[in-house]
Amino acid sequence: VVVDARAIGIFDSGVGGLTVARAVLDMLPHESVLYFGDTARMPYGPRPLEEINKFAREIAAFMLGRDVKALVVACNSIEVAAIEDLTESSGIPVVGVIDPGVRAALRATRNGRIGVIGTEATIASRAYERALGRAGDAELFSQACPAFVPLVEQGDTTSDKLLSAARDYLQPLIEAKVDTLILGCTHYPLLSGLLQVVMGPDVVLISSAEETAKDVYATLVRHELLGPESSSPSHDFLCSGDPEAFLALASRVLGPEAAEVRATSVQPARLGGVAWS
Ligand code: DGL
Image 1 (cartoon, rainbow, N blue to C red):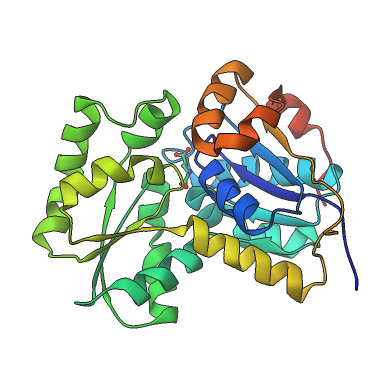
Image 2: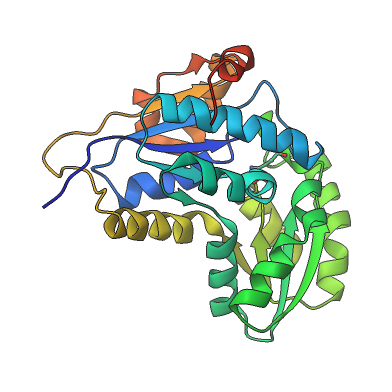
């Protein structure tokens, strides 16, 4: 049996991708994970796609320098801006979050009316419309929620400010009678309690985390990259901003593994110095 002990590289603009990392750790307990959150440069959502693309290639180059065996783009905004380039240039398997989320939503909807919320970059790209068009038949209603990511990065998942922003953003989707809502930003599963209150109990909230972890699993099997079952994995959680703040949030999102988190500041300038072919 072929085994590959190298780590899986997972990255996001901040803590959102940890929702995906959590699902990967649960599903693939023998795999080592290298996580990077670009907290010094978040939020990505309001930035032009070219800039997000540049950041994504810097982070991917850094991860390739650390010899990861696969890349998980645990951020919708990065996926819409860069996944094609990363897939073409990295030479290793690259897994995204959009197709898995769409797949799960199509399974869940009863009335064929699906909502998607995400960052401005993600919603403006219409990537979910394209993914849905490829995967099945349903009507899609989309809404950008730019206030969410900066609040979540401050550790806010429950405030009145957040609740009233959510009511404003989601009203058109409630009026459109969606019965399924894709959380099209990896930060949003941290808001699922609040979002469920606003949408009502009958709407199914779709987090792409678990479905993405299944794709990671399938990808490792397909490419014969599964790790050894005997060894205990080692995880490395890095960020470009304040490691203390990152660690505080990471322990909330990750739970038990947070005790093993080594938060290290990786400055963008250093990332930018790594060659990318
Ligand atoms: N988690 C990122 C996403 O999925 C948030 C991007 C941001 O920093 O705005 O889109």
